[in-house]
Image (cartoon, rainbow, N blue to C red; front, side):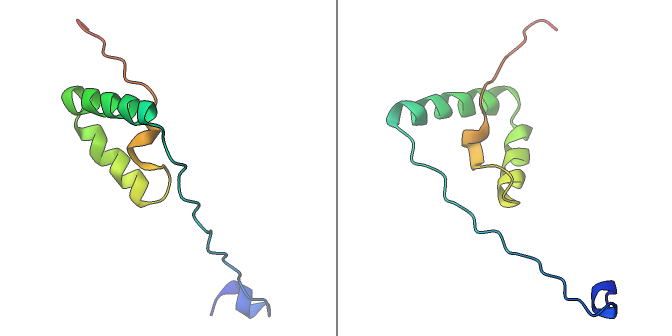
Length: 74
């Protein structure tokens, strides 16, 4: 028995409806592909992290990668 049912109430958990991500232009698709290539080259383990976030519905996939900065010589 849950606390809510013990108090005579019901718990309401709303299932959030996911809105599909907006369509991308060809230029946006190319920019995202370039950033994904950089991530694959420099920090490939980040792709698994982004995919896990996408699986949980927290990001819209690889399009959430906004910028990739490579610091050489550190």
